[in-house]
Structure formats: C-alpha cells, structure tokens
Length: 166
Image (cartoon, rainbow, N blue to C red; front, top):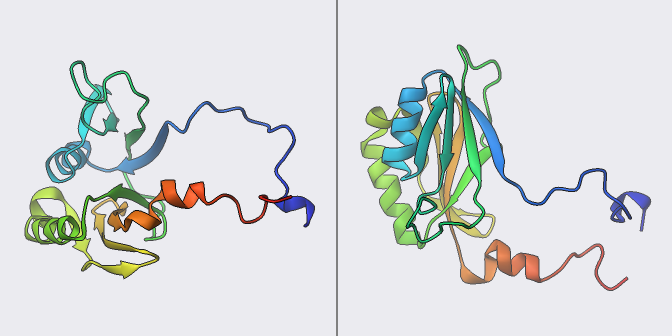
C-alpha cells in the first residue's frame, strides 16, 4: 500500500458535516422558479444576489424540523465564466424508475417555463436509472433512482476496499 492510500492520522480540517455547495445564475428569479416549481425545493433570498436552497420539510412543524440539512447557495453572476460539464452535476434522488420517467416527461414539456436548456432521456448508467438536464446557466442536474442494493448507504456499509482488513 502506498502512503497516498492510507488515511491521515490527523486531518487538517475537522468538519462536523457537509453543509453547502455553491452555484451561479445570471437570473436568480428564473433559478428560483425552477428550483421551487420544477424541483420542489424551498428557497429564501436573504439579501440581493443570494438565494439559499434546501429540501422541504425543515421548517417549524415540518417532518424534518431540527435535523441537519444541506444548503445550495445560488449566487448572482453577470456572466457564466466557466460552463459546467455533465460530470459536475447536482444529484437528486427519485423514489422509483417510474418517478424518473414521469419527471423526464414533465421537464421536457416545461423546459421553457423553468429555464431548462436540455433534458436527456432516462437510461441506466453506473448502477442507477437517471435523467440529466441542464439549466440556462450551464448547471447540470441529475434525477436518479438507485436500486436498493446500490444506494449510497448500502455501498458505504460495505466498507473501504483500500483500508478494511489491515
């Protein structure tokens, strides 16, 4: 085993959780309409040029209230200096293959309304059934259904190929 594959004894950073990611948009109003209307996410604009996005259900009285959550920070930019590529995408989980197919149909029919530039047909890829779509700001999105034996929780429970059994 080489030194690069061994975990560090003490890390440089001591995070408590992964909490956020950042993307840019040239039109926060359009981005918000897509995130709320097409994706069902919750948005707030706490200051000009900043939109905060999270999954629904964390507000007071919600089923997830009090639990940790992730946030996407959408920042206004006058231009998109570096277009994103499909491998740099934001992923969302779907409850079934049928849900992916239904979302594909709905997104394809409402691309103009939500500012979606292109929607790819669903297909099996890398152990999941998914469709990818790109918004007008070059942000790629994936909606995927993973079979129960391929969810991230199950894969993580298998352990680390490079470190287990040492």
